[in-house]
Length: 205
Image (cartoon, rainbow, N blue to C red; front, top):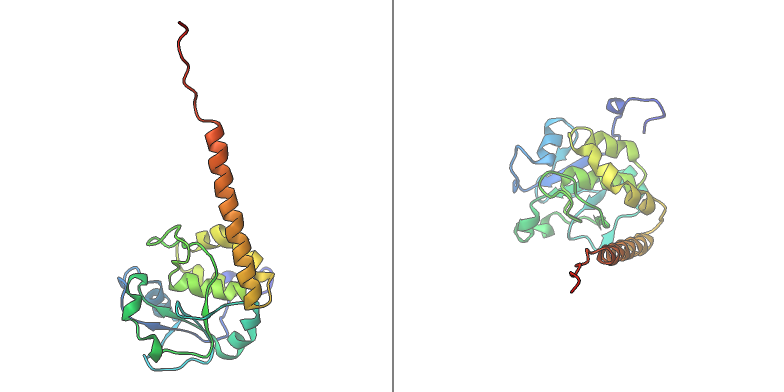
């Protein structure tokens, strides 16, 4: 972790960061492959196990600050695959005792900008690092992408709320609260917009 005043590029990620890559994405746009070229992530063979937390769409439990010690001991990994081809991924061969889902967040990558839950590899890793208290690690990964800063700008309010939680159950409750607030805000905006619809002025007879 870096202290105040240290430059972002001086951050050294001191836990293993890894991915299983299924080559579903365009190599020129794949965030995982870019991290690999930069030496920021290790590629795992299908069948290899990972002792740390694995961010996976097949996880049964959402990540929470209580996973921090697992990441400290074993690191953080992600499944790099296309959201459109999940059925092609042999998840049974990349099983981990610590598979985790991510809570509600918005993607800001060029492919899925603005879509909830459709995070790419670097966004998923950064979100997991933030929620578990490794802020500088998340910033280090995102800094390699021109659009990386927007992920934090768009999701900061959500990430800060998730960081106040302790357990997976707390995260689920916070996510429900966030979703309710978003729904209420959307309904209110529709109601308010309806109040100011232009009126038709009828000519006097």
